[in-house]
Image (cartoon, rainbow, N blue to C red; front, top):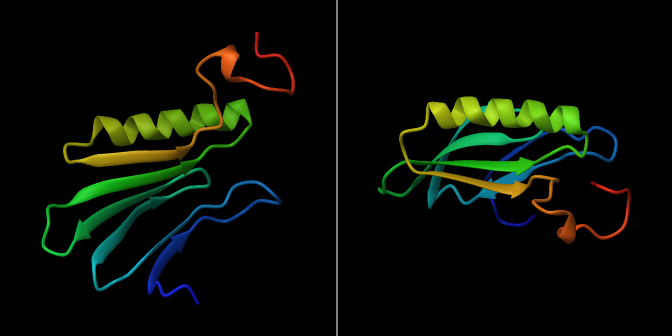
Length: 106
């Protein structure tokens, strides 16, 4: 209904997770490399341009799951030798000054 021919999505578990990447096949070629609960790793090519990789992330709020995510992303990073875009919601903060509400992070 949105006009995209290609798409890939992760499964949702209850109210948690869920990533969807959609594209127009006339402009972009997408190859699924890996699909996990917290990320999708894709090889992209825009028409006749150079290949690059895209990894959208929706990290779990569970610390143990996020630890697994970082281990899996490190394996990808260690083997990456082409352009790579890693983006998304990592469900983490860099400083307690960023946090509003909820439990303490100190």
